[in-house]
Image (cartoon, rainbow, N blue to C red; front, side, top):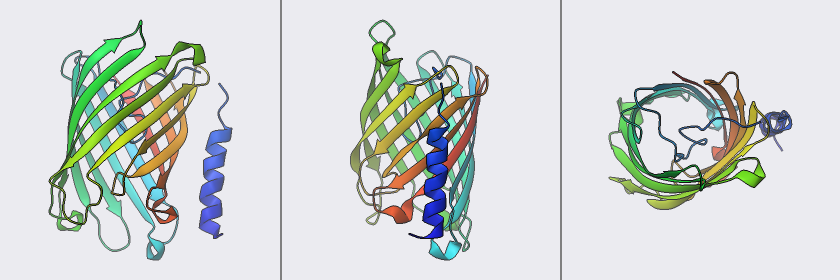
Length: 238
C-alpha cells in the first residue's frame, strides 16, 4: 500500500469518525447526485468546491476548483450555473455547467418527493475537449421519520451527445442522507456506470449555521482506485 493511499484512507476515516450529532437541512445535491430538493423562489445558493487526488501529477494527481450558483425561479423550479478549472501538471481544462431542475411531487406528510432535470457540460478551452454533453435525469426520494429523518433517493440518468470514448450512457443513481444531530449528518451517493460520473462517495456534512454548510467526502471510482479523489465544498443559501 502506497503512502498516498494510506493518507487518503486516513483522511476519510477521520472525517467519518468526527460524526457526533443532528438533522442537516436539505441540499440541492447529495454529494454528486442531484437530490429531489429545489431552491425556494427568489433564493440564491452559492457553493465553492475543491477536488483533489492527493498524489503526484505523474501518477494522475490533480486539483480542481469551482463554484456553483443556483437561483429559485419559482417554488418548484431552479436554474444553476457552475464553473470548474483543473490543474493536472499538463494543462488547465476549463468547463461550464448549466442546469435546470423541476420538482414534480412533494409531500411532507408522506415524506416523498420526485424531480426531473437536465445539466449541460460545456468545454471552455481546448484542454477540456470540444464535445458538449448533456445529462437528463429523474429521481424519487423517501424520508423515514422513524430513523431520525433518514432520506433515501433513487433515480436514473441518460447522457446525450456523448462521444465514442465516453463510456456508459445510461445508469442509475442512489443516495442516502442520515441526520445524526442538529449540526452533523452522514451522506453517501452513487452513479452507476463507467464514465466521468461513475463514482460512489461518502462523507459528512457540517451545518455551520442554518444557511451555511461544509461537506467533506471521499469519492471511489467505479473504474478502480486510480480514479479516487477527495471532495470538499462550502455552501451558503440566502
